Length: 397
Image (cartoon, rainbow, N blue to C red; front, side, top):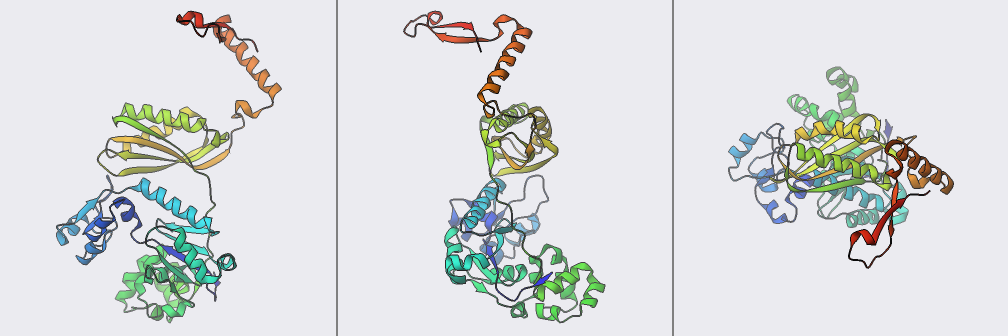
């Protein structure tokens, strides 16, 4: 843990990011009571909700039956995990474009250190303006000495007025419910409120030993967060994206999807951008006929480059599709080391390439006869008879 006394962390918060992406080009719907529908096959709980739905008491994670009982006119929007992933990746790339080393927490929430950007963009105010200009749509910005303080400041900020917290003790009057912003301390909110601890200042005044005895490591972490101590950021490593998409002429399921998956795998492995590297993890996604999308991340046990092994590993994931799909997409999530025998034909020198081609022709003729390797020669291109236009001749290397 380390203690920070200067404003070095900037938090970017895009409120209701998943709901905004699911609504798409109909932002006017956000003024109506609406919520993200439960994902197919998951527990029946609503996702992010609009402000109008919150006015009826509907909260994210509430059971669907209770949400409809509180707001009978609640509209359910199909989730779009593929769109969320693409939009969030575009937002992260935009932030990296201004020089930020970003640590994404979840879709719609990210932090980065601003020390190296202050001179580049003209101080903290200039960095805040540049960050807002790099992102589309409403954004809330918060700055603080640590990650937790910056995230808390962003949740309190307005869309046009960033919140700057210079010391953690400025949040002393904030409710203890802000601990939900950290996954490791979210479970402490209810017990602390039952004990009568309502603010972060009251929590910071408690002895660390008492918190450790009652709540263990989570209690110590909570005390460190409200006291201005946090771990350093761990920015992500920007990587390249490699994806292939296949539109299905008819809504597909079963064997049709398996054939489409085989085509996707072959196309992905044939892309020159892969540069003979193996695959460590991939993301298989689909656009559903009934609306919304489906997304599944798969990690191979070992880095692979064999099309058959990739198809066999991913074929079982097609059974998780909740509805027929009209489009499939396969994207590389992580590359492995280059395959030792996966060199491309044109990656070698001319002499070695010719020798490999001769060997291939010899093997083909040994297996299928002297006519196994032929080439097409254009003889009479103006002839109306196909046999006169082109003839087959032995292939000579």
